[in-house]
Length: 254
Image 1: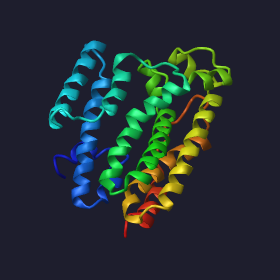
Image 2: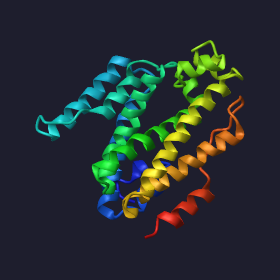
Image 3: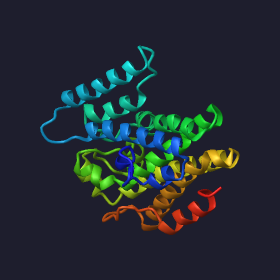
Image 4: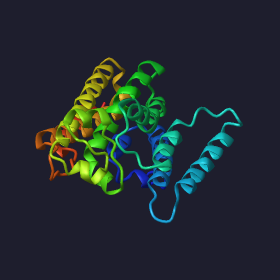
């Protein structure tokens, strides 16, 4: 295993990255390493204050800007991590949650589709939908873990519609009515997966091998959570090995 690959080795996306041709694979490992590094800063607990975490992210901004000789593109991925670093997110409205998903997931997708070899269109559309599908699935999978860290990413509109009246994370996730809010988020994730699949079906096969595997892994997590339900106590959803193997056989070999 190369040094660049090491941070990605335990990722749900590792198999998807492994099937890429060597230059594209190494580029994805490098992108994953960057994302992991800034995410670790945003998630840091203990002695680090919000201002210290934001200062570390600003150092990354400066490093990225230096690579582009002052013509750096917007630092949307870092902007997303800064949303987590500044304060614990608690029951954002749908618009804020969508912005968060765009920055921490779809922005990464817009970089990834270039590595995969997709043209800007349909690549950006795939990044938009698949990024949101993956991130919303992550939010549902990590409800209890996030609550323990003081975070609640479920949108306030969905919580209110379900009858959950608190945004205190541990109290909210213990409410049996939370399942209704989760179902609304799951429906949005499912719609984004369906749109992603339509885009990939019309795209060059070789360019969507990796995102096909990503969608298969996380789609199976979403399906398992829907089958189990979201009422406490919850089991943390895991990808179906059988479904992932089927996707590898179908899409991972040209």
